[in-house]
Amino acid sequence: MSSEIFQTQTNELIQIFISSTINSFTRSLNIIRETTSNNGIISGLLTNFDYHTEPYQTSDNTTMYNVISNYHTFTNSTSNCSCGDSPSCTAPVYVNNGNSFLVSGMYAGCFMMEALLQSNLICFYNQSCINGLRYALNSSAINITTTALNLTLPSQYQPNTTINDILSKLMVEQWINTTSHRDYYDQCNPIQCQYSYVGKNNFITVITTIIGLVGGLNTILTFIAPRIIKIYSKCQTNRVHPSTGE
Image (cartoon, rainbow, N blue to C red; front, top):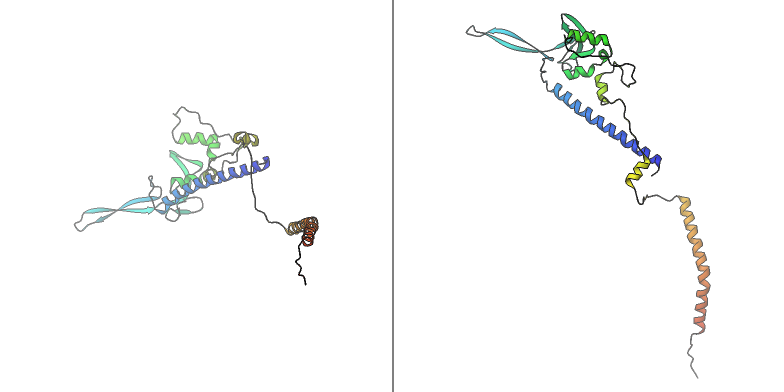
């Protein structure tokens, strides 16, 4: 196997591995998302349903209450979206601690997973946003240093790239592979290589082969035929012919 063929086949195997790994992950994630939304599972934080009670009187004038559930509605800058119509409804995230603080790029929705997948990390590239978020969460008492992500570092992901897009690439920045044709043969150490293939002869090859066979037969007959005739003639000469006397 030449170095070029080895490199080509290795690259193809790596691409197959990457594609199958990504497909397996996204398939599992989508199954979880569809199972959760299609079965109408109620979120633990009640983000997709609202509940309220309505009193009613029984025949003996006892006050009872019905628990009524309604799909939660999220309002964004353009329209209202009901979780009964779509599990992907979202609205911007605000942290309320005296003053409402808008967390840039983050969304709340019917399900936390759906909202997270539509969110991005733009706030974490902005030190002011991080400081405001810490203040709103009243986490200033925690003695840790939180610095913004470095925007100057090379990356295929932009600050506004959604979490869904990042997950669709397995959060991998770059796939790097190193292959060596020499190391491959040193490891395998083949004693011999054999291969076979099935092919069809073209018209010219067939004609050439027939001419070769005919030419070979002519040469053989030219050499053998005179000797056969000579032997036959000699046998005829030496044959005894019986005669009858009168």
